[in-house]
Figure 1 (cartoon, rainbow, N blue to C red):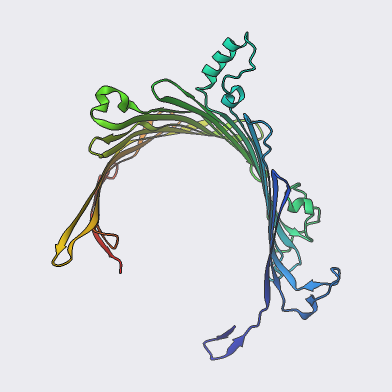
Figure 2: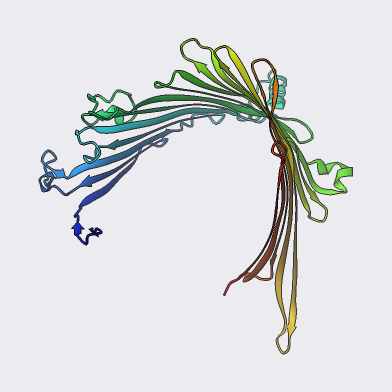
Length: 449
């Protein structure tokens, strides 16, 4: 590369670099595939560091600047039909030894590894259907179990762990165990360069989850779940903990089969959900909770989806959420409350009609046109307030948003399309007593030749 400065002097630099990649895929046996990827970037400017030889001990390919590699292993044994298990492991290794950045000959290396264990138990496949070889005394018992388990969704469990470690000032390349995430000990010495702070990080996160569901009569289904996550870092004095429970969902479908509703709708379904989440920041030394946030979320509190007899589709959601955040500092607790509620309503209609026009001597030329109409209406209210240590409630922000968004698209043929989009939005900030309005109209046409 060449460059010229303001005095007209010409400077030139010559760089030779090599970027290589290597990938291996191997199936140790049917249900255990292994994958290894390696990427390297090397500097070839120094002739003394460049030597081609069939002897690996004397072979040289410049000075390595950076290296990145990943290893993945998956194991999914299929021993029983009613019980499926899985094990996944992945390790990503990054190394930077660029002499321009690390002039003292050291390097920085980081490793992130993740492994997860999952299982899925299907009681319906365990008991199966009625068999010919069943003992006559067990038939009533097995019939009752099948009647119960046929309404229970498979139970899914999962555990995963994330580990991240990074260190600078390493005098050599870390061990193979470190590169594959099997240990946090690099296996080499480290030093701190003069005038440069040594970078070090060590973190760990564990995640637990479980979910299942129950089917009731009349198309009703209730799903439930549990989630937990605990994370910590060696460089921080606190632990983060998050628990989601209960996590419930209710879905009622096929309501159109009732005669009164069937006269009006082609399909009609209703759903609702509720979840509670607790986020905590815990002191490692004394085990006390320094921060806590409790969130209640109805997303949606009530939702429905309707298809009318004229193929008009209507869907709506009423949402509500409430969160309380507490902070304890020197024995004094401060609290913040946030409330959000709103609704969304969407109407869709699509119409297709084959038509055409007559041309003398050619007759009628037919084409098919499509008209799509959509109307979105949404309103959202958010409010926050603060509570000081004495219990006094201080008002915070309060805002409301109202939006209308109609859209029309028309397809004259496969080559000619057009549409119209409008937006009407009103926003009010009650604390600052400010209002904003948006009025937008857009027209588009697409012609393909």
